Image 1 (cartoon, rainbow, N blue to C red):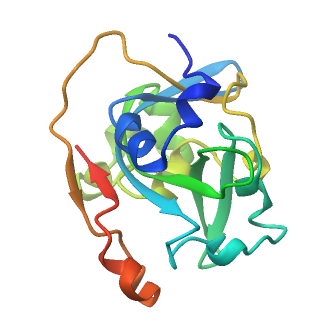
Image 2 (tube, rainbow, N blue to C red; image 1 turned 180 degrees about the vertical axis):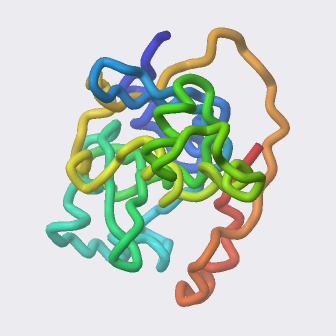
Length: 195
């Protein structure tokens, strides 16, 4: 599998967000590769987006990775319990990122199931299977992504994104981002993209 290059991430955030759909998110743990297909993302652009953590140039210990070079992971905690994985985009000094909102397991779902629920995949009920990795906190739990992976280079061997083996023209849908009602006019931006 061919990793995405740094130049892939250095482009316009809305373009990167849509181009991430269908790509393979790979997490290596103890020599095993957990592989998922990216199915849903949200874009965040600090210059004009009140939902972005770095809106207005707000540089904190948490957001400083967004001001760095593209192609790094920005992982943060929400509600004190759920991790969220973002991909830093655009030029250094331009704080932008794409949140990975949902994935579809492709390889090593048994390991993911144990990480996510503490039991084998065949022991899961229909509700658990349906909601396996269809949210940012859920996918991070299934892939054991925590704040330890914050600032990780996505060209590393522990966490990276790959091209697919074949070119597929996906039917990409767009809509409003989720749980950002506080963001005034930005709550209406159609910056959520999904398959």
